Amino acid sequence: MRNLLKPLGQWQMQLILLISICFSATVFSQDAEPSAIEPVAIDPAVIAAADTIDEATEPEFDKLVKALTQGSLPKRAQTAKKLAALNDPRTAQIIEALQTGNLYASKGSNPGVAIANGKTYTDAISGEKITEDTDALKRVPINNSMRTQLRTLLAQLNLNHKTAAIRLDAVKRMIADGVDEDSIALLQERQKTEPDADVRDAIASAVALLNLQSTEQQVRLDAIQILRGSLQQEVRTALSEIASNDADEKVKLQAQLALSAIDDRVAAFRLAENIFFGLSLGSVLLLSAIGLSITFGVMGVINMAHGELMMIGAYVTWVVQQLFPNQIAYSLMIAIPAAFIVAGLVGIAIERGVIRFLYGRPLETLLATFGISLILQQAARSIFSPLNRAVELPVWMSGSLEINPVLSITYNRLYIFIFGLLVFFALLVILKKTSLGLKVRAVSQNRAMARAVGVRANWVDAMTFGLGSGIAGIAGVALSQLTNVGPNLGQAYIIDSFMVVVFGGVGNLWGTLVGSMGLGIINKFLEPYAGAVLAKVLVLVLLILFIQKRPKGIFPQKGRAAAD
Image 1 (cartoon, rainbow, N blue to C red):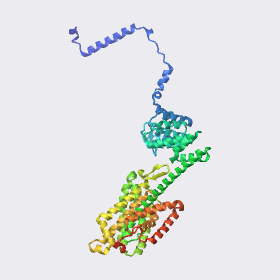
Image 2: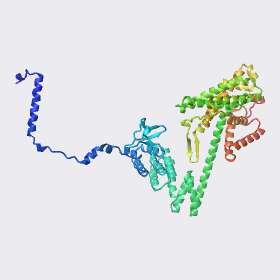
Image 3: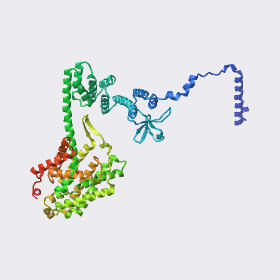
């Protein structure tokens, strides 16, 4: 057999194999009985399940998020509760977006859901940025009742957040919205495992607020004792209600005592707040007066254009933000040295062009610099227009530091206060530890002797005036974070700057520091009683009376400079 197959080619072997397969298939098909093959009946329910297999396998979270954008408001409120029950970390962001009006969705049975952040949209489920078909997205509407429900629901979700500040804010929201048995149960459950003391105290206050409604005397007395030191407005309102209307005299008396204790704490924090705002105003006066203290106190020049140099620094800040619109967070780091250089160069130009011809004639320097101030104001109007320019506040300077419900400190004023002290100490180091400072002090004390030992008095005058002008420019950067930038920006501070220099002591930097902070605090304590304008008038009157007793200020110059 092997010899017979050997002559066959490859194609012949393949043909024989194909014929064998076909023969075998024919034989087997003839042996099979036709009745063995029957049609299979398919259940319609199976067909329906196959058609909706995608919906069945869709995650519960995705279905609830889409359902949150459809149906009636009560139905959507129930959907929000079901969504919160899933304990998905994405839930809080979605509910907060719905509550604040930033949740958007497209129409249809399978809507796309997005969270808006300004002009950008992100998918609420996947978190991916949406760049196409954003015009089809419409805001998901809610009413005030649902907004309140969502606020409470969001607070309940945040009770388990890993950040203590967010948990504390959640408890405060629940107190503000009104506590009930359900919310108290959640709070008490959280209190058992809460590690943060402030959050535990807030939960205790929430429980005590509910206990104030108890019919038992001792329960209400214990609740009043717990709320005795609380500064929450809701606590004061509840205690005031009991102190006025409770039928039990003992409970009413304890509520009145608790209110008195709370009022004492509030008064103490109000005092601290006034002191801070006074120091904040003082830091602005320090920045505006410290440059004038050099030019007026050291050089004897009455520079009425000092406010316009501050205006230049403020405009430099605005220009920097226009040049770098996407770098607002770092714009101040660029604006501070830029404002110092620009204002300093303008100051040197003023000194070289006008002031150096008027040394020893203070009245003429006053008139000349007043004219320069008008020229600079008109130049600002011609270049930037008379309209005020708004400088954008960096994110890290926005908002406030809330110490407690009655005391908060705005970040921009806090940073300006710190910045003012840094500028003061930097200038102090320059004048005390550098060659320029030594020459400035030598020229200010005895110009003829300084020139006799080789000091270039004209160069020192120019550098001193430029230094004072540059610091005025830095003051303008700080002012741009507190108010709008305009041609008349500096006029509001020039008189106050002269008052600070005279009050503290002409030519004394420590006097400028004490004078600015003192006048700022005095002004802030007078404003609540006399108003802003009358408070400044009273400060001026007090300053005049003080100068009558101490003509040279708090820290008068000593030695040869004082004799001159």
